[in-house]
Amino acid sequence: MTAELVDRIKAEREARVKAVVGKLAHEVPELADLDAATLEKVAKVALFDEVKGKLRRAADLERIDYQGERETFLHRASKTGSARTKDLYGRALSRLETWCSARGISPLELTPARADDWIADLRAQGKAPATVSVDVAAASSFWTWMERRHAELHNPFRGTKARPARKAARKLAVPSETEIRLLEAEADPILRAAIVVMAQGGLRVGALPSLSINGARWSAMTKGKEQSGKVPEEARDAIQRAGLSLRLPFGDFTATRILDRFRYLVRKLCAAGRITALYSVHDLRHAFAVRLYQETRDVYAVKTALTHANVSVTETYLRSLGMEG
Image (tube, rainbow, N blue to C red; front, side, top):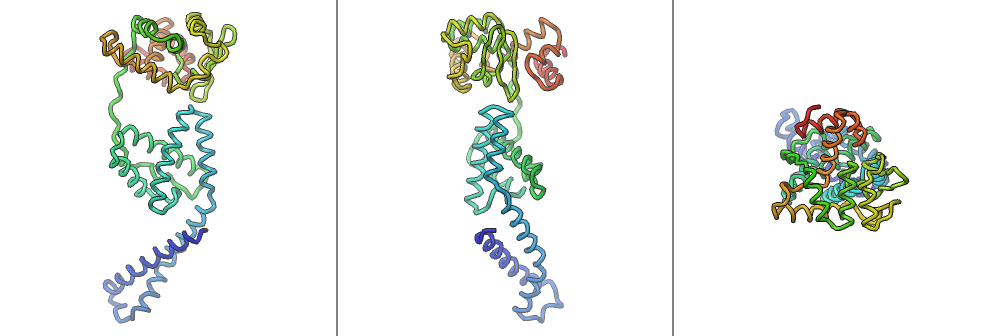
């Protein structure tokens, strides 16, 4: 246990002793005749178990390798999610650590009240509700993971009411086949290849950097799972026309770079009235799901193609599009 931590606990104890001494003198008539020194001894005895508990907990926390646990958590996040997930979690924990450091406490000393204070500070800084929600979700995920590994820890974010209320989700808009063709026609060759792959294969944009084509089949990692299938001939043709390698066509591009280029194109076409909505790259995946379901009327085929863990997710996905389940 560090000397700094012991000194802080001692200082807190002295402050509590003074407060208890004053309370004893006014609220316990039987002790009114005792001198100040004796009252202080009585207060210290009364607070003995409280201080002992704090010291024991401090010793327990001192044994936890916070930085090591943090790195392990982020490493596993990158294995089960995307690189973007790891980045978001890391940034959120860094903001929380900075906040704790400014108050002279370890992140492991967070209480529900302190967790609420951190959330309130984030909101007071003018951060968007969505950003605050992501930070809280990331921190909560880390603490839930930590409490499974250390019995003395509990997630201080569980049950918080300080998190911003969720805004209504954006109404789903699925681009028509005509609009997808227009997006392809107006895109540069590389972006066009990405659009064709997402619309024809149902891939997430985060899977594109890992996409690999071998013969008649392709595979990619998406949210920690492998997605594979038969290469649509149109997708193969678009990749080759863009001068990209079939082995790893988008290996030199980040998902964010592709997303930004797509967003710029969509805004330009929407402003010109040539498409009806500000579509996201994920809407191309929705378009794929709609087309596949209309062709097969088989929700399980859609589930498999989208690599959903459970068919109920796919059913929700289709119901949200106003389609029968």
